[in-house]
Amino acid sequence: MINKVEICGVNTSKLPVLSNEEKDELLKKIKNGDAEAREKFIQGNLRLVLSVVQRFGGRGECADDLFQIGCIGLIKAIDNFDLNLDVQFSTYGVPMIIGEVRRYLRDNNMVRVSRSIRDLAYKVLQAKEKLLKEKGKEPTIEEIAKELKVDKEEVVVSLDAIQDPISLQEPVYNDGTENVYVMDQVKDKKNTDELWAENITINEALKKLNDKEKMIIDKRFFMGRTQMEVAEEIGISQAQVSRLEKTAIDHIKRLYK
Image 1 (cartoon, helix red, strand yellow):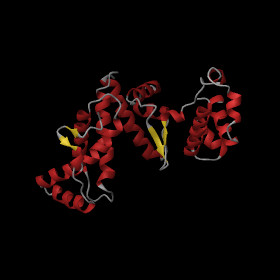
Image 2 (tube, rainbow, N blue to C red):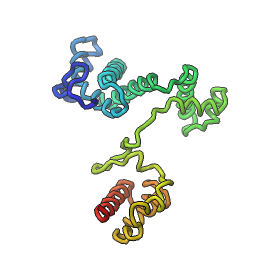
Image 3 (cartoon, rainbow, N blue to C red):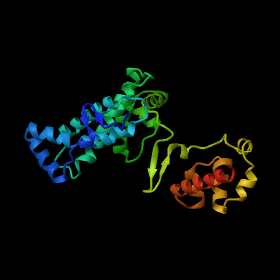
Image 4 (cartoon, rainbow, N blue to C red):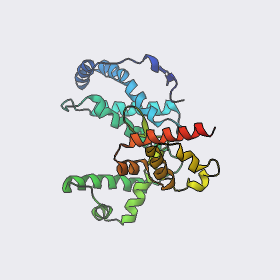
């Protein structure tokens, strides 16, 4: 129900929208302690919260709960925003809202992670950021473990424990016309010609495709390549591979209805 109109008693279809000039003016008043300006600014950015929490739909979470948590992130962003930053508030606020929602989902996950492992994970992230600044490059697991004086296995386990599960249908890229999903980047080692042959005559189906479609189907479903790998091999974008793959599959489906 993440797309319902009313969330936490708020009619989302009637949420106000502030111009950049209005936001800047209200932020200045907020920093001077104007409570009325703060309330108006919060109301004017609830659409931002809504757009963020919609990304977390499909997880079985209550939309009202996610919206409330998102509002907490918004308020934290308002309180910590530096007017001297040469960025729009949304650039700063969105990561804060996302972080707050992710913490909520992690802490309320059915798979409980012990406090000690979570604490270590946060220390690992801090050490990673510190080493990145010092060395100018991404630190290795061994370097992080040495910095924290723990075993590298503990570092790996702690980081794995705080990773949020994602849906295979979650979009990871959009070229303006079509989404590329997580499932499009997963190698397919099971759907080989033996399984396809149970339903259609592959050789006959492939004959109906053009050369590029035939090559993409071959690499994707017989060789187990990801769309990214196919794109690199034949010199086109992943979005183009995705479109050609779907066109080829639709063509086959039409032939064998």
